Length: 260
Image (cartoon, rainbow, N blue to C red; front, side):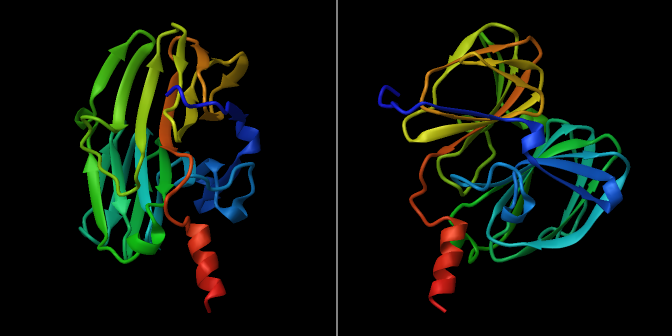
């Protein structure tokens, strides 16, 4: 940890993120990391390819659609959703605190249904598209009770991906956790070679004196960072590599185009 020298802190407000809607606005999204055509301040980086927060204003279903190569994670924050895929051919229900990963491999089709009032993250990772697109597809659900929690001075940490969690990924160097803060100041410092990407689910606070609020998205590199949160603030954090040791999806596609 002592080798980190570069300090990078960036706070992206909801207004600077991309946005989208489905089914005439029944489902609305803000996207801290959008697709290249989505607009918004951030584009894919590290192995993070896409990150959207979706809210359903009414019962709504997204029809069957294909995926290939990526790892697609869904985290239910509020309410209830259902998923269907062509690997298992059955609808499965996920409730608040549950999560799911699709390792799309050589191809899978998938449909989602959101109950009214549901809120979720959908996050895509690039696990080395050149290799993963040739693998068999898979689909795995995890229940809230599957994820270990640990009380620390600053609040309760829930580990989604990392030590003692059953949630396994192909993408290397990823850990995912949520902090329910209790108002006690603390410090964060990513390990050498990694960065933090943080979504403020709710609440407010400051990092190194810079204010953040609900639905802000925060990028951290280096450190340490001094964090002060109002009690009840929830932060959802992904640690990922600063640099990939394989070509990103964009680099892979550019190479394919050059080699035509």
